[in-house]
Amino acid sequence: MACILVFSESAKGEEVVQLRPTDVYISLFGGVALPFKTDVTESGLRNRTVNDVELSNSASIGGKAGVWFTVPRKNLGLDLGVEFDFTNFHPDQKAGQILTTTTGGLAGTNAVNLSANFIGVNFLARLPMGVTPELPNGRWFPYLGIGGGVEGLRYELGSRIRAAPSAAFQALGGEKVFLSKHIALFGEAKITHASHTLKFQLAGGDLSDRLTLNTIHVVGGPSFHF
Image 1 (cartoon, rainbow, N blue to C red):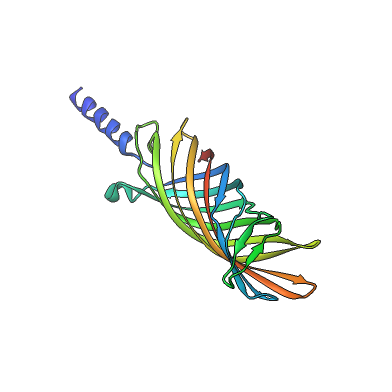
Image 2: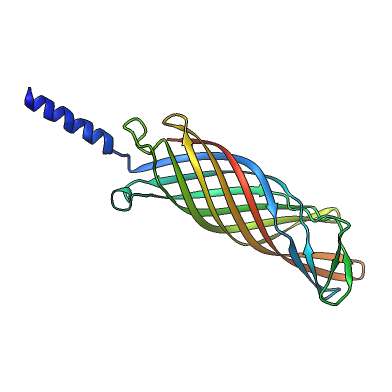
């Protein structure tokens, strides 16, 4: 009986620390995108920089698919992960702004419809909290990450739509809470950064606008783990 008790306690111990080597997930999210003001540098027809152009807040929606690796937890106390991230938002340029320029004059803005699509890969670290035999990856965990990819900025040019793709980078942090072993909810804040050149054909000649798009995204949604 003593041997049976010892074996039983060992089995329980193994159950507590036993982990699957990977934790695969798919997430959907929605929230708000808050773009910073930006300076727009015009070249071609005009050569100047228009300061502090205000862009519109918009919905931020998208999805993620990724995998956590639990092997590093033994030595680091952390799980490491990688995920694919798709995010869409609409940082439209507002019309009617009267702004200063580097040439010393004033400039008025026109409405420009913009649609940004970020597609990238993030590298992540999480700290599992509330680990139990039923929830070996934790009841909840905070996480941080950095990533990069491509941001395509689509804009209207008359009746045509053109794209201005650019390299993009982002940093993010959030928290995920499990409702069950396979279903969780998460909230996340991230900042995306990219520089774009928009090319317009006007009656007096061609015009290029270069701008840097820095945007804070505050999003959340469900996550499904397999």
